[in-house]
Image 1: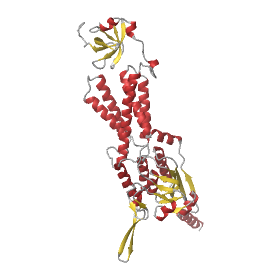
Image 2: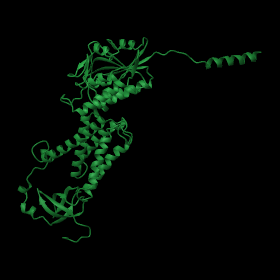
Image 3: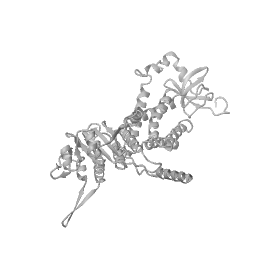
Image 4: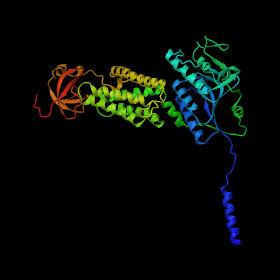
Length: 466
């Protein structure tokens, strides 16, 4: 009997332990601030914030917004992430949601505004505030329309009539970009649309007017909740700073300029250190964020190697040099795009345009700076103290230089193509006219110009004066 009771007790314990435990958890509301210019930094903040919200299985995400706008491609990326987020995303416009901010707000499931806040004015402008050409406006109009359409529409049947009513009218979204759009009772086709809070409620672009975050959360239906706020680290801020288009153009300038000046001077010096450092700062944040893939970075370095081969090994400038430049440019541009290998489905036209402009601006600036520095070295100015400015023709017999054509000597340093040669026991600045020349190789002077000799390598086995 005792054994029977013992088995019954164990069975009851097992049954009890297998019963599901029902415990109500407090809803988590994840808050992300967007209170700055829409740029790479704010884009990174949003992406990381949504990732953390998913990891902690938050019940809702609330964007606390106050921005005058910013970069279109960053805003486009942010609105795409919001549209495809599994967690409901709402926005509280705490004063301003202009331009790119309006696009991001329209992508959210719910829009709440503080009394006195504004949303709209999404015309694409340049750095001076002037409107960009129509092809940019056309893309923005389409993006605004499609974002509004993504929230769906209701079909209303009234008698024999079927009425389609958008939850957010796409034409209103387009009117925030194009002043020519006419909506009776709202815009007259002469001004870009900007809503006040009251107007936004009336026309379906605001789900409620609230005064603070807690009021918004209660309006969403949460009374007992836990707020978790995204906190950016200094690493996130640094990555965003390094990924700004302006800084990326400057880094490209340093990379190209450093490579050029390193190829013009013997040994490894400051230009190569500057180029390597700039290369790391350019590619590292892009690689960490998953934009730059291994093959894209490799593409750039193969381009550098081909360019070096063209300069040092192959005389003239031909296929290797052109191919090297193409690969370098391709590597820099592709590293800025969110493509997966050769799949560009998720890459938008503005992304390609901005990436190309960023690289082209950096390369054009690098060539301008290289030309300027080349002319400045040895003159009065920044490089005056590091350049040889003594007039050698005043210190050394001019005829001795002019009569050097045909003389032989040896390369005192590597010539690639510049370096130093030894002739008759004296050292002279020299430029190779036949490509790379190793240290110790026999050379012959072809001519003298601008206080330096132009030489070529004497083939191995050739006799004296051949």
